[in-house]
Image: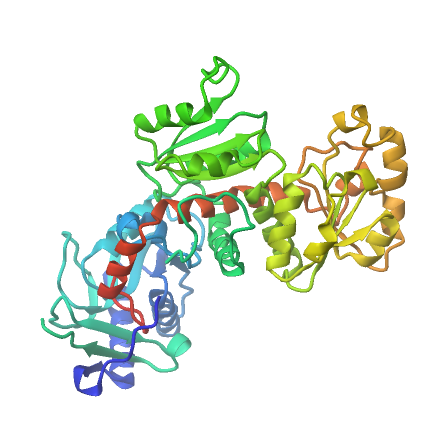
Length: 189
Length: 326
């Protein structure tokens, strides 16, 4: 990621502060358990980078509430992107680590922002190379609309309407020192 | 995103330290791909790669082929024997004919120094040097660097000695460039007749006795002794060579600390290296082979994506601190 200059404060709007962020994760954890019914075959797979941290947190919340162990994994979809030619290679490829064979498990993909759906498309392709889960669900912190593929999330922490030039910035404690979601308005859109 | 890596990979001499680190860092995640149940990712789907080998090679060719296939590229192997190369077709004609069949990359090994660069300037496809004469063998040096970094956690400040036929070795040349650029201390050791002139001007130490090299070094990269060197008078006999320069267990046991032992292969056991050393606990010779596939995947991946102007345009539209969208 290249450093992008911070936008002026007037263009930045808070979507979730730390407390709303925590409540959203709590709700998402409960909804995952309700969706799964049985937590025995649940696997949470976070998409690099911030999806990995979110999956870790949600898995922790489920473990505390239900008293069960929830395996988690990390997925880097860079090598499954359909736009290597246009964006150029990303030299910093994150770690991919999955807790064993996914066959007959219920895999829940966790990501920070759902936008065009192309990341999820790539993640579905990549997961298929690690086995045949009996079910794959999608759980995102923010759905900002703008889909380019027929993909939808099963569980959403927060939904917002955005324009193509807007940016949704998700920050997590582990990487950024605070939990927050901001909307940065792009110019001229 | 790939800053100075151009269209081709000809050698390590023209690369910056950042370029080399970029390749090594990119190789890291590719190691894991080879451990997956399905050892394949679609990154180079639809790319056609020709492995054009004018010299015999088993390890390097197979390593490139695995790297290409694990990235989902389509590959064709062309060996000098049994092709129109034997009928006297020139290098450029061969490549242009291949290019007319719409290929994307050429991996070339050739007996003449400069062959890869010559080809790269004349065709549009990416060219990767898999060894050209006595000039360079960049992917071998990159896998050596990756193996050293795995073992020692760093390259900077590491003392590495290349042992043997440095004069004729493209592996040595590429290693010297790569190690110096990443801040290692470099030495060479071998018979006077097999040391290139002027090597000390690069800042490389020369040891004439293997015992001195062993006392000094953290790691030895033992080069293959080309057996025909004896016939051409560079060394008196293989037995004599082993007696004076052989990397033996007895010699290593005298060192204060264990040395990491590397060899680019194929080994002449009992000539340049003792079998007990090659198979010993400090040998990373098979790790080098494993890392070779990952490093070649990284090079193929980085060269294949290179459309800097498009990358810049895409970066302006996306990418931000605090994780954005797709």
